[in-house]
Amino acid sequence: MKFVEMKLIYRGLGFLCVLCASVLNCFSLDREAFTFTSYDLNVQVEPEEHRLGVRGKLTLRNDTPTPQKIAVLQISSSLAWRSIKAADKTLQFLSQPYTSDIDHTGALSEAIVTLPQPVAPQGTIELEIAYEGVIPLAATRLTRIGTPEESANSTDWDQIGPNFSAVRGAGYVAWYPIATEVANLSEGNSLFEVMGRWKTRESASRMELHFSTPIVSADETPPITLCGGDEMHMVTRGGSPKWPSSQCAYEPVGLSVPSFTIAHYGFVDRPAVRVYNLPEHAVAAENLADAAQKVSPLITEWFGDQRRKAETADLADPHAARFESGAFLLTPLSNKDPKAQGLTAAHQLTHAAFVSFRPWVEEGLAHFAQALYVEQQSGRPAALEYMSLHRLALSEVEAPSTLPRSEDEANRSLVNTTNEELYRSKAMCVWWMLRDMVGEPALKKAIAAYRSEQDKEPSYMPRLIAAQTERDLEWFFDDWVYRDRGLPDFKVESAFSRKTVTGSFMLTITLDNLGTAGAEVPIMVKFNGGEIMHRLEVRAKNKAVIRVEVPAAPQEIVVNDGSVPESNMANNNFKIVEEAK
Image (cartoon, rainbow, N blue to C red):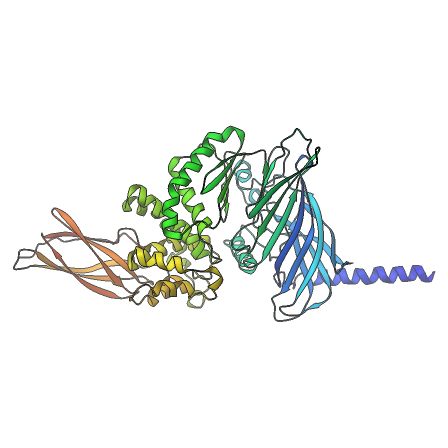
């Protein structure tokens, strides 16, 4: 056998050994060892072909305590890796399918890359990458767990198509590289936990995207590409043809999910929001923009001036699930209820005005803003009724059988949780309770003092709130923010009334909190002709006493007007059968 042939065989065997070693290591790979700190991607979209082609650079940082020789890059299974380089040198990599519901196809195209040399802890490496493929409508991850096809397609509506393209990012479609452990929709909160870790790791990263679409003739109007970050749209006019492109930057990525949509949009522009609409939804776009303008003063009062203009883009499928990424909203504009438009605008404009990388702050305040909007429009009872929908979902998450063990309380706390019901619904209730406890002026000052870049530890926002009041709130933050203690459960243990010399009644109430979290709860005393409300702080597994003077004989005590989430509200009413003599 010739020497050259032998050399080629050994070289091939050497590469095969590398691949085999990679395969053997797949089971022990730390897929989340690297954080993607920077993306600089050129994205070519060809709607007629359903195609996406990406070229660009990534910067990876080793966030483990040991040097890393292997890096994992993942994209949607409908895309294929073409090349991966470092310092202009082609790197060896093994491309394999990886089953995961973090992508709408239910799988990823995973590249296991052998790096030129181990990357030290906190060290970085820059990679040049190229991949391409198609993004069709796919709802495999939902249909394989039994979701009806029509419903699945309206939930996972992402696709590139000739007439309309809309593609969400990680958690829906991995059209930009990610690296995560497996996520499985059939295993409880697996997907939310994986995505939560990903968002936390990438929250301070930066992403720059440059989109281009096929050229059009001089007399054609090119489609608009929207990507949700700080955007710039361009059409190069050299007479003919036109070269449409868009640039988009996320610095930092924060809680955003970089996404894009391409369509022949018209738009309605208002100071607070720009609404992009398909031709048949022009009137709906006007209505939504007007609703946003009406909500804007409330949001400014609470969260300050907008940092950026909110954007809303129309979705072609009237049944498509709405999607938000910061101040960027994708939603069908057809058949919008005016009340729903106000709620949508309150949430979106809050994101445009207030930014935090902590979900319980950012998302919790956006949901709190929706409750404020309902209260402004229809009063406190209507707001509490609206919040009751969130409390119902929260009571299921916080049911005694689902409560964490004491050592896991910190993991499920608002400052650490990846559970959406907790950092959305529970956080909304926490902000509402804080307003009731410290008052609107104090809470507004604390929110105004918040600076995301100064938020270096979980106690930062609680300290801002505590600084606006003389009350001791550490117990509240410990039960509701730093740890997941569950929910309170209030019960009137006893009530005794006596008639005073002036003819009024002095009612002594002993309130028992059977639950595992403390709270300040409103207590209503009803009598013939009206009611009186007071507030009482009752710590977990403790009792507290309050005396209430009532102008007439008390008839009933009602604990909690619905502003405090409870594990059991069936024992909140106490009838006073006998009047004092």
